[in-house]
Length: 460
Image (cartoon, rainbow, N blue to C red):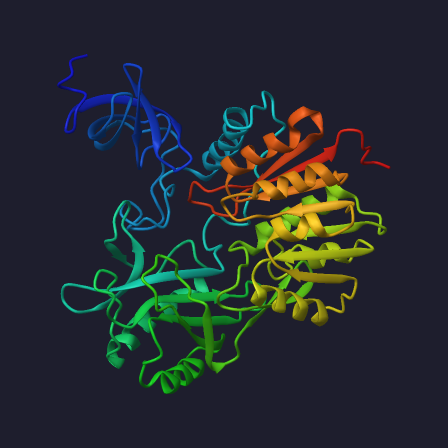
């Protein structure tokens, strides 16, 4: 190979052999790795190199020479531009194969587990129309029209959408029409480069079982003239809409939601039925975007734990009690730990709504609360954010040695890192790992790892 080829702008011919955890196709050219978005294992492509390093490069397809048998026509007309999905061009069965492989690779490469027991991926009811929440940044087109959508891949250029095939279809009418209403009201759209303008995001959330919808505008400050009248008009127009809120995010930040949310019309929450329980869900609190798959994973957890009714269960990072409350019905005592006071308030409300009285919730960082509980729980549920568990959480578990741990993760790299620490010196053994597809059409995969203390017999 001449160096003139391995440089920006160089053209190479490669076969895609794998998928990265960010969703890009991966191929090799003379022992060097090339990452190519919008490709599928089995594709043969002429690729132009765009970012080149000595050992690897990122490229872009110039010509598809031979399509993979797993390549399909995307359901969305802007799938090749929109950054909301990465894998609409890959058939769903192969997406599941790739996600399981992603979990296995992380456990081997990062965790050092040579032969991890990873089950087939728990599938979504449907790979389309599954999202119960969609939050769209807003922008102004060159002709002055209000736009809402997702950013183009690798940029902050907005791809305007009037519908989205992965969100609940009942949200689509609102997406197109709310943009027009914002236009007619003359409300300014936030410009992140100048930190000027009012409306930053449009957020829609729906109860999959109840059909109740919340509409939230994320704004820079409180000056939005006419919002109350417009909110009341929206409630009259959309029978499923139960509440309109404003969330205030005044900072120069990439975070979508600010700290304060105020209900303008209707109610501040929607109702959702999850695992047979009646939950209140607010616009800005965490709730899994795939209701049905989250329920299916909960069923796996319940089946694996075989709870007898005399256990003490701790749910770390418990949120609004999505896992805590269904599991509390099967144990003697449940304790939820959560950093966000607002989420704990909702968890308490949800417990009361469902008549569950053997559960308590504590506000604070898990790494501070867990080591000071003064008990050894029978079961600990870990469901941390993407960064995984703080090292103090792992050390606390290694000291207290709860008989069983269930680690639910939305990022398999940090899951593998933390499992390596828990299983060092043979203290804990991984019984199985159950991946779950909470995000079809994307490269993201959820996974639940079931650990037992090595001398503990889970059938006793």
